[in-house]
Length: 334
Image (cartoon, rainbow, N blue to C red; front, top):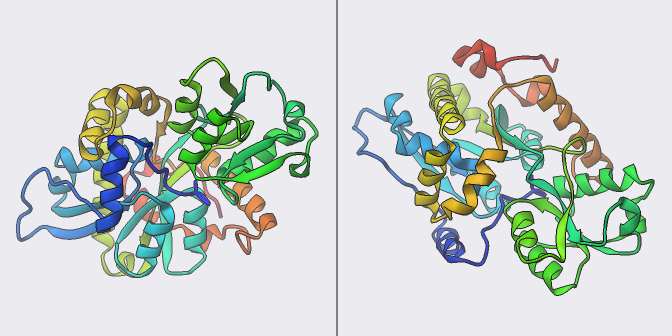
């Protein structure tokens, strides 16, 4: 999700670390020394709970098991990550739905697999007196303009017969949304946990107005540079296998997975375990994924953020995923 950005951290010890990460460009955590024979791969990742799989794969030696010396490079914003990736600094990138679709349009990047999705921690929070779309008329509502958050907001308004012109949309960074709502500068915002949950936890004056369930889905996707995939097809399969194994571990033991992730990025285990439990970690290429992406792309074409709908035949290569596990291919977008 980002215009949709990777979700920046809150103003805490975790944010301090992430600021340092941004300053140096990247940080990686290694569980064991790589041998000289291990193939080096660089994976660009975000920092919040949606990217737990890569830290688990690293810490548990799953990349190592595949003969990979994997460097997991984390970025605090999608803009920074995609800019670095387009400059040729990485092999794989895990990003939100919109930046992924935008990168595919360049012709230099192809999609490989979904990684995670959520609707329960993706939603609209606001003042306690707001109970329906009609209650937002004339009010200030924040989101990231050109993001899946804006898509959710438009869809929620439509359920009450409202259009975007009926409200005042404010473009804010996620941490600023929370502060602005607490201070009364806005009446609501549409975004993800942990920002939604932090706003709600501040007291009884703020509540969850609606989750995104039935309205929108926040998705994270793994992509690869086309040149890397063409030259190193077996390494692509190895990365997918390790990530699939990590996905299974996250699903079977979210508590351990959260601790591994928190140790890597100085996250708060107690706060993040509920978030991890609500995220669906699943690499299956299915009809729900295709439909969600097509609907988002249609919206973004209307907004001018994309020039045309997704060309699945050219922009996503599911053959690697099929070779790793045929069961991960549950539909065809052709």
